[in-house]
Length: 516
Image (tube, rainbow, N blue to C red; front, side):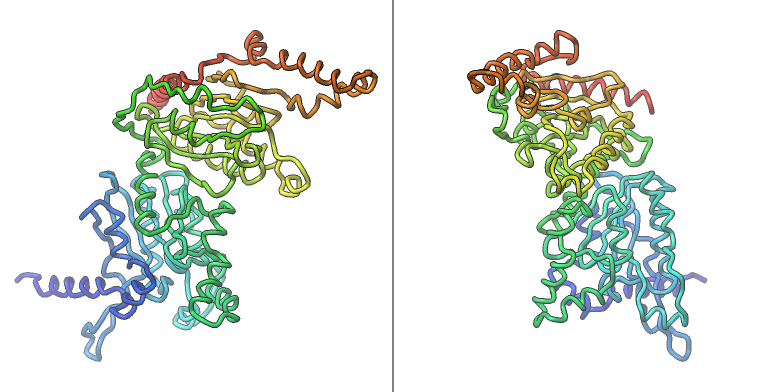
């Protein structure tokens, strides 16, 4: 006797699961410009690689004879797949089934996905849409009681943050636990106009939108409360994209820089860029006028492997650029001052961004390259109100705690405590300075008139005296004077920056390989 009858039922149940929330709800999902959960998994993962786990989990419906009449699938899909040829755990919320809210008992499926990631040391991708596994008021009636809130499996979420790369894609209105799962990641993305994130559930959004007259207005209410314009500029989410397809591409790109787990090294890629490439434009990149700005992103494109710069968090903490990139194919984490925003001064959000990025680099053993043009911490009442010094010191502490190799290139300014946070001064300084370097405990221009106030006031020609003092100090502040005292290690031709950093990358990865 065979088991063909049972296999027939299995196929029947699988076919029911493929229907998700039903034709009408799936059509409504598509009508909102959103892909359904199964289409998302197919688009994100390598073609044909997704193997679903727990596909037939859900709620069966039976007639009076106990025969199956239908299935409401679990609103959460997960399985093993490959991305860029490497194994991952891929998950997706199904908004077509009760807005992605977890039905009783089905939360175990989500917990198992989290456990699979850290126990088997596989990168985890969460595609979140709705409450992302949170409960609903209807569920309480089904249970017959309320309960003190607890999040099943949150310990596994924390374990994953310590163990494997975690990517979160917010692909719709995401509230409560869904919002928490988005933030509990190493890299997160929102789709502009499609994704919103709320700490509370839909009732708050509905309340905000009560004064709006149309569905379009209600959508605007959601954007006003938790759209990507808000959360990719306050640091809750790293990046915003224009489409789901772009979100999938960025998730795949981020993972290409990462190892599969902590303790494994990331992979070197083939490089078709010349190690000894010397860009003539670097020689005149930094203006002689100290208040003129220049494009640090242009500098990065000339120094790093062509086409490899993957910027993270572009819209927040903007005085520092943070990016993953490659040097001679080796993956590196790059921090770069942006003189076009606040002159490159670190304020609270920039410091928070740098701290988080340095911790990411150290956790996944990526060497750090720091391109420095930092006039110090932002000053003024607003900066003090934001607690800039606390966040700045936390960023500096992260740099001092990091154990991966770090190379700094001082391109122009390095002033005060923020300037000293370019590297850990207690370790070997793998550092090069450009002839345009300008450093000190504070900018000379800002303190000159105070320091020499009596001399200037006693002069018959204060303007001439001030100019004479400035001319003397200009010689004292020459970077070559610092090099005489070995206060800086090497002053280089800016065109040599790429070859020297490629050499650093090779030595850094040689050192990291000895840890494995």
